Amino acid sequence: MANDLPDLTAYDAVLFDLDGVLTPTAEVHMHAWASMFTELFTAWGIEPPYTEDDYFVHLDGKKRYDGVASLLRSRDVEVPWGEPADPPSADTVCGIGNRKNEVFSRVLREDGIAPYPGSLALVERLQAAGVPIAVVSSSKNAEEVLRVAGIRDRFPVVMDGVVAERENLPSKPDPAVFAEGARMLGVDPARSVAVEDAHSGVQSAAAAGYALVVGVDRGAGAEALRACGAHVVVDDLAEFLA
Ligand SMILES: [Mg+2]
Image 1 (spheres, helix red, strand yellow):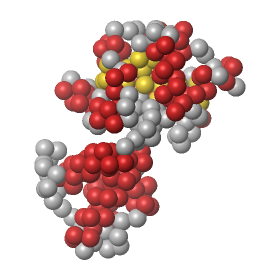
Image 2: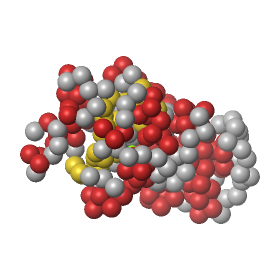
Image 3: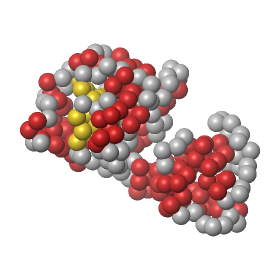
């Protein structure tokens, strides 16, 4: 029941995950993988062609390079692993993974992306109430996604994959990124809210000691999110506006 949900404006700050919480970015990732692999499979004569099933079986939820290796292996294709610094033109696992990132940016620019209306409405409510907000994302594309979605200016602090790499922070579920996000915003996690849609993200926020961890169930499952440490789970952030 919406009436049972806590008032988020009563907390010192609210820190949001990006992909799946503020923006439906998964679709852009899916589209980018499909576009990149369809092109690659055609150019290399790889059979059978890439299908949407490949995304769920080999790519979804995996680290980028592991996903590439898994999908190529399913077609009996072997290429050298290479290194993360490989250019997108390199025919290595890392190069192909980096190529996907390039396509992601192109798809984002061409198709655009809009924030979830309920999430945007909550952000507006918090801003109107003077509650500090921030983004805590593992993505290295966070700045770009926020800009294309037209909400970059709303967030004074964006703790993303670029910052994490620079500061050598271990990825979610480690608490480091949510702890750093609070530090950057100058707030105490014990008086703040974290909003997440992924198991690993909820675990990270819970371990960082947030007063309230909100799980947004975009498919991860309410029960699973609660088991990971979410205090409340909603289907959409508009429920907090009721
Ligand atoms: Mg997410």
